[in-house]
Amino acid sequence: MPHHSHEHDHKDSHDHGVTNLSFAFFGAIAVNIVFVAIESFFGFHIHSLALLSDAGHNAMDILSLVISGVAIWTSRLGNTETFTYGYRRAGMLATLINSTLLILTASYLIIEAISRFLHPVETVGTTMMIVAAIGIVVNGASGLLLMRWAKEDINVKSAYLHLLGDAFVSFGVAVWGAIIYFTGYTMVDPIISIIVSLVMIWSVVDLFKKAIRMNFDGVPTDLSISEIKQAILDIPGIADVHHMHVWSLSTTQNAMTAHVVMQGWHDGKAVKEVIRHKLLHKNIMHVTIETEQEKCEDTDCIGQP
Image (tube, rainbow, N blue to C red; front, side, top):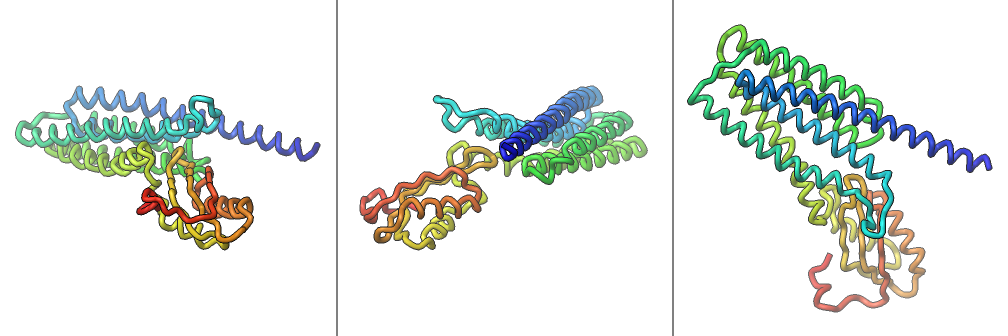
């Protein structure tokens, strides 16, 4: 009974921690949505591409928070008869859609910034400074909300670092706003816009590529199928491995299926347990293995991992 009580207390503690983290995410997302709306409004109002670019960059904070939040939320949902793996890919689907929109937005801002060199537009340095200063506070406060969990979850750590990075970007926009205010050199605005837009594209391209790979059931970027195959072949009693398939179930969970050719009459169940244990160290949690006694000679095995 004490053991059961300990497990129950641990579960309650875990659920409480997840709930608190969810509130932190929702709070950070809400604050950032309001700030992006404010920054976009003033960016259009004073014709500042720098503010609009920073708004786009801050939209990436929202994307990062949503992805991490969805991963946490969907991890609590069970599987169904229709969705047997649950809803773990919701985060990556959101990533694919939002990263595409952000790349298009950044590309448009770069084109618009180039046109500003040909047709200069006056902007207001004081407004840039004030709005950017608000951005420093918003990003910094959002980062502090997540700091407690940053060491425990890679998704949270990614969002946390992203928020702190954007606080520094907002600081840079505030400095450039001060330069415009004191020198009147408005060409600084499109220059900042191009720099921030390029940073935004550079930041989101990796996410975009990962989202494409995951949605097409590609091998996760941090895994090598040849290394996995060799790790399995190193186990005594295994002669060959073929028809291997490795893919992502979510941002944190991977799966694999494979046909394993046994050498002699080894205990298939014991060998499967050894394989599963080895693959856990490679972050592959869901493993389905079919054991065989004869090596595959079919033409569809040729060239298979």
